[in-house]
Image (cartoon, rainbow over all chains, first blue to last red; front, side, top):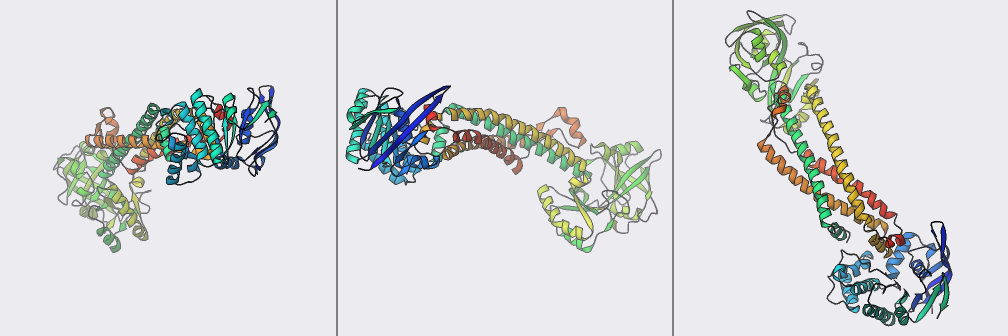
Length: 226
Length: 404
């Protein structure tokens, strides 16, 4: 199967004061279309850094990443923004919704940036909100939703514009056990039914249960991949 | 979307937004009302001052302004006469002769300026006829009206005779005996001490003018209309080899005083606007900084920094417009209300009297006083808003998303 994500000897070093931290020390990883991959490992092992680099939010010091047919080192910041908008869906640890927009408007936000019509946005927003179990909550603002509901809206936003990949960074970190289960179930359903490639970075052992491939990072290197 | 986001963001901190709007509104109201008050006082000053003698504009010999000599006169050609007749009825026109003479009573002799005027035209050109405090204005050919101080210095009263001695247009001796018909008071010492008026026909005969004139005065109630008519008349006047001078040229010291006052006021308004904008800039910066994490998330989703900057800019634009519109409304209401009531400045009475004005000022709203200040506020805020908008351009996504 063709790899939609290809990481080639990715290195990332941070300088914190006088200390140099090697967050990633040559990570090579291929993810095929339709895979559900979990990135796990102890705190500071490089999960989030790897996810950020794959998502074009950060640039590596060494190596390169290919998303679909684009090598990220060759892209300008503006092209990276376009790639994120059109091909990648993000679900962050904190719910990260735009507080002044309703659930439906948050979901339609990226589609609006893509220039989709109001009608198309509304239809799609309703459809994805229904699919994440938030029927009837389209007009609620984030402050009027529970943590679990907000994270569902974030997932709905991530998939609304039909991205090739969904990157989720600790999506269950702020959720209770029931809401975590429901969210992970939802991600698996999207993966299985819609073929969305999902890469999830998490500490949560439950998250690992839902993924079909487990990549464990230790000290910025892949420790195991099964 | 940009407008929706900007509008809703504005109301996230309702109280802070309201305080900002009030600050902008007060500033806008001040920069509408105070310039209107100044415009009203300038207008009153100009109307009053030019109403006494000079009028809004004058047709003169080209050299008359720099050296007002008896010989610097002109004949009113047929073309000019026709053009003056064709002026709208609200523009009043009067011909004049001017001479510098020695006036003598039984006991005193004093140098004075004599204006030869058309008595029937003069009431609509000058306020001298309406400022007669003793006797009457000119009604007979041998009469003279004197300024109050001049009459007092000559020690003459109504019905007394005075002798005039001067130089005629042909350099001959000009002499006449005139009867005092009235005494006027303008409140402007220079005018009241030196000016006398006689009928133009008498002036012609006394000074051998042979139809020559020193000026044709144009005046009327509507200064904007006068400005327009003067502009239209100028080419013909210049074609005739003459000069058409408006009040700014006729009274350069008055014009300079107004310009100086207006300039210093503009500087004060500018300082006020800068102080308000700087204090609001702090609020704008806080509102941007507290959303750093949200901006980071939006950048992560693929929003370009330029769009974020524009959203912030639109927020500032909306805030400015709301404040400025509220301020303009307040300024207009205050200006109209006090424009009817008038504002009394008893302490500045002496200053106003120099220009023949009363101590009551009436604010006057013009398009300039209504729009100039508020437009500067909006522009200044938008300019200040480029700083927070610019700061967004430098955000690093990962760091921004980690911000508290």
